[in-house]
Structure formats: structure tokens, C-alpha cells
Length: 365
Image (tube, rainbow, N blue to C red; front, side, top):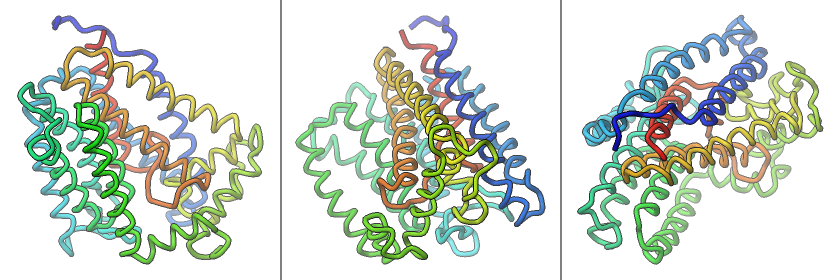
């Protein structure tokens, strides 16, 4: 491979920066009321988001210029560190509980989510492991089960927090890499049936998850309980119409939609910017996924190809779940909208991952 690298994919870079800019505007608009009410500062969430975005952009531009092939030697260590953090966060007194999940490490309101680090760590490790010329994933016991076991262990630790949404995104990205690496369809189909059975077991094991399923099917059966978030989200999207109520004019952000600056920010965006604004955001995500998959298909290195597939898959799955929840097509789960929602760990790690993708685009044909 030539040592001379081209410029990164300009369309990919434009999409990333555009989504980040839209996110900044919407974090302020959606979080201004809550910020003033809880912290006496309507700019509270925007200030923190700008800080995380600054750190994330530094990481993104660093990774964009860091030879991705050198990441191979950090794959094992990175995964071990991520596993260590997942164990530490479960220790009472060390891991902080927020939103009913012990998933945070930090001091006061500043913290990190180890599960966010695991998403990228797992993608990096599986890409390194499965890109070895001697590895034959078409074999079931010695080929498919080992990577599934590692990702399954990480999923189990994340579920102990519990955080089904983040665990689902991580497993989805891992399965995309495994499928791209050449796993047999028959093996994956059989394991998919076991996965569905396991998912049903997880839902039945926790009453709150079962309530979310029933609320998804009929939110009006419990309008002030499990169905509240979906109903308020739809109340926000509906009045938005074609062009929206206008930037900053949302009604649902006044303590109707819970945490409007995070998981349900797309409902506030649709209320203020309407169908046109929501479609623009979706179009930017579609272009990002298209350009990312183009990188995966045109890069000559298997490690780079798997890495691109995992990163693009992580973004796409997260977008599908978040917007699916917001518009009532999926049960409620705690997943942020990449680059748009407020969040420190998620934003910084997402920009870091996209920096790797931009790096890969410099080596693609």
C-alpha cells in the first residue's frame, strides 16, 4: 500500500460536522428549559456539550491522521481495559447509578460510561482478530463461537448494569463484523433463534422491560406510566407538521418529554423544524452510512474493511433504534442519537470512531 495518503472523504466529513452543528443547536434548544430550571443556566447543557465536542474533535482529527494499521497492536490491550472498566463500574460505591443503571464512573456530574468504550473496543478487537489470514470463521466451534463468546461476555457485563440499549448496539455491530468476515448463514440463523429466545427471557426477567413492550404495543394502556414517553414524543412530532413550530418554540420541552436533550431530542427537533428538518437529519445519516460502506468495500485491507463495517454498523443501529423509539416503532430504550443528543462519553467516543473511519477513507480506492 502506498505511503502517500489522499485527503479524507469530504462528503463523510461534511456529514459529520453538519450533524454535530445541528446537534449543538438542538441541545441548546431542547435543554434550555431544563437547564434553567435545574441549574439556573439555560446554556448549561450547551456549555458541557461544547466541551465534549471540543475533546471529541481533537480525538477525531488525531485518529484521522493516525495510521489505522497501528491500531492492531492496541486491540487486545484496549479490550482488556474495557472489560476492566465494565467490572469496576458494577462495584457499589464506585459505579454511579443514573437512570436506574449502574453504568457511570466519575465525580459529581462528570462521568464516563464504560459501555460506550466497549462498543469501540469490541469493534477494534474483532476486526483485528477476524482479519488474520489463519482464522477460519466458517468453522462453528473453533471459528464462530470464540468471537461470539467474547462479545457475549461483554454483553452480559453490560446487562448487569443494566443497559439493554448499549448492549444491543454493541452486539449488532459485532454480528455485522462476524457476518462480513464470512460466517456461515446456517450457523448465524441457528444462533439468531437462540438470541431471540434469550431476548424474550431478558424481557420477562425484568418487569420494567415487559412494561415497555406492552406500552409500545398500546401506550394508552398506561398513559401516565410506561406509555408516557411515547405519547409525549408523538405529541411533539405531530404539531411539527411540514416546517415545524420554529426553532426554540417547542412546547413539549417544558417538562413534558423527559430528558428532551438526550434520548428524545429527535422529537423536539421534529416539533421545531418539522418534517423538513427531520428529513434533513435522516438524509445526512444516510449519506454518512453510504460513504462509510463505500470505504468498507473499496479498502484493500481486511482489518480496515471490518473496522469500517463495525463503525458504520454502530452508527446505523443506534440511529435506527433511537428514531424507531421516538416515532413509536420500537419499545423505549436508552439510546442517544449519534452526534445530535447531549452526552459526554457517547459524543466523544462517536467522534473518535468517526475519526478512524475518516482515516480509513484516506486509504480506500
